[in-house]
Length: 375
Image 1 (cartoon, rainbow, N blue to C red):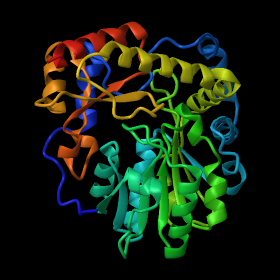
Image 2 (cartoon, rainbow, N blue to C red):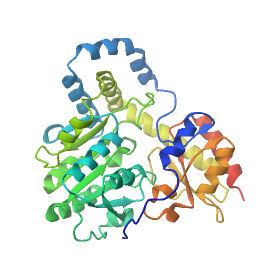
Image 3 (cartoon, one colour):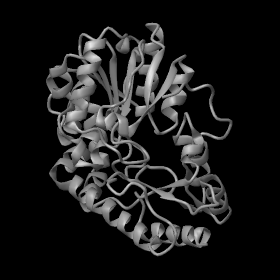
């Protein structure tokens, strides 16, 4: 574990994702960009009806129903009765609120999982946090050492880009440690819906431990709904951080139409939609791996089930070089140095490919990657 001295002087990952939205083959961002399922199309076909329903229903009712539908679909039943839930425009907004609440209370020392998506350390750093990296493997086996004075342990599970998950036993272990030391345990579970192994009831484990906790849930990566999404900021009602106060300083609430759509998509997910999603991502992962088989290219994350895939580039190349070369061919992937926010060179040999795409587009991306990486 080592201190983060400064931020890298290269573009953040979102800056690299933006050009991919305009042209070319986009397998950069992790959002869902493929044809909705039959049942999802039925929801979309009801948009005029849903618009009127959202206009006529109290927002508080729509908010509770969206929260209930989503948290039930991902197995977080204890959150329905034992927590306070704030609905946000996105998980990034929820992250901003959490960071500002920490800053307001003078919290500064955060142990953060390494690697992870770079907007998490960026937001925390901007709020004045002093970050210390904690390796995934050491979190899983319980050997990570948290130095004296750590005030927050922040874990992304499932983690982006590796697909790593914190098991129930590991969560219970760290929750007990946090409870004994007065540390806030923060979880970002934005990719939870892709992996049923992460759908055990985290909130029952957290409540049993007695630790302070804040959990960020998100719907934004799950459904091809033109980025209509909600992030949920979840915490115990007696949490002393001024989360609700900061929330109300930033926003009044989420669109009632979006809340209603999230409820509909979450109910569909719970009634078989998640099984379809898991099969779709699994099939696309197999397609990508199969297309790249036989070359000196492999995935280091064989157990991953989330909607992105890391690829190790051949020796003598770097992820930044490969992503730049592909971009010149009109194919957009992400280099992985930025995920390794405290040690960019540790991610230098990888690129990340998004799997939530039509199979034909993913096949074209794989062929371009193969052409670029083949020795």
